[in-house]
Image 1 (cartoon, rainbow, N blue to C red):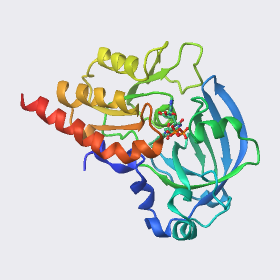
Image 2 (spheres, rainbow, N blue to C red):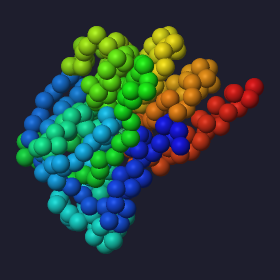
Image 3 (cartoon, rainbow, N blue to C red):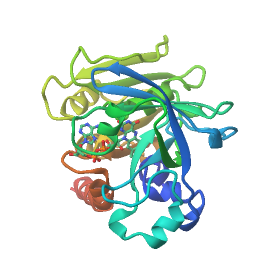
Length: 296
Ligand SMILES: Cc1cc2nc3c(=O)[nH]c(=O)nc-3n(C[C@H](O)[C@H](O)[C@H](O)COP(=O)(O)OP(=O)(O)OC[C@H]3O[C@@H](n4cnc5c(N)ncnc54)[C@H](O)[C@@H]3O)c2cc1C
């Protein structure tokens, strides 16, 4: 299976379910122990989860599925996920939202998650804005499946704020002797935040300055072109950008799919549930359009 199609790199539910099967999936507990506004648009919450102590996380794109309880449900955290799925009406099953582990300490079970504060709509973004020390929720995972491999000489990473945690975690794990160029889209030049830095890293901030999410990012990636070194690509973020970047890589550039991890983390105008439900169709349409373009 190509990296571009690997469910574990795209946050698909199947990746987490693999860890015990949907029926046997058990929610772990996380408690908020720190809160920091790291940019005007990003909130970092530090969580403690003793059940995570000793967990080995070998990749740089590890993510978890946070559980949110629908309004009107008659249960609260902590809950037994299997029991709720068996007994509660479907509309009251917990709703999941996918987030990257920006950092993880296997000795303490503590981890950081950076949430995009994207306004009042949605569940996770507004929850993070309101979160207080001591708040608790359940989560499933972690899943994940990509890291910068030493078999490559160079890495090109690109994404918006939602993918920045995975991009920065990858930059912190660059194999010795390799280099990376990372394109990170942000609202504007006032929205910068702390990033890994070394002589091996070329970090390009891409301000949207009011443009639609993803449009400036793909322009920047296109303009930089295709590196001559043996390169691995990690491209994630808003779905519309991913569609354009797939064309740039696989149709225009002849990049091997095995050399790219690329998927939409979210989609404009869709909740995560809506995006996950339509993602296979979106991917199939992209792949069909790419095949047709290559046959011309
Ligand atoms: C593997 C994986 C890892 C991810 N890691 C992170 C992460 O570390 N940090 C992070 O912030 N996100 C991350 N995401 C994206 C996150 O899961 C989605 O953005 C999710 O939709 C947010 O849920 P919500 O409840 O806030 O909004 P939803 O209820 O899902 O959506 C409500 C509305 O908000 C819009 N919206 C959603 N996300 C954004 C955004 N980023 N910017 C602007 N508008 C948005 C939607 O289009 C919709 O119109 C990741 C996704 C995947 C698949």
